[in-house]
Length: 158
Image (cartoon, rainbow, N blue to C red):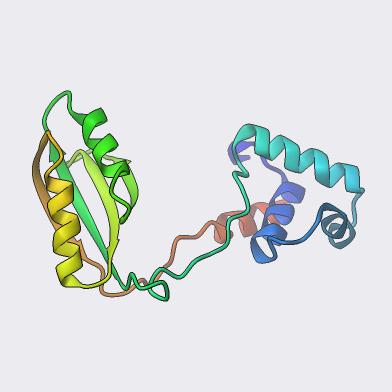
């Protein structure tokens, strides 16, 4: 199985995804297993880095950041670390992925409006080593970031 998670692990993760404020005892009751089993599995998944925390799901648009954009950055050889460090310092940069293909980094950023996006892009391209950038504005999000289908498949595997 992918990553050696079993059906119980997947069902526990689904339960925590749906209701992240549930305690270990309530999880054990709903899953029909001992409290110690749930705690041991959570500890193991935390230790392995599968389960990284219980943050709230936030709506950035409701927080005033209604514009999402993606940028592909081409960077000069040897400049990845300084560019990533500069990107980490920009609050509106939400994610950065090192990629193959035309660009070197794929950046997801948010802004309050077009003028604010221009300011964010200006900060991004000001990073030493950024050679070229191509930015696209997201019009909608037909499929939001998700892992549920993978967990559903794994939960049904046994």
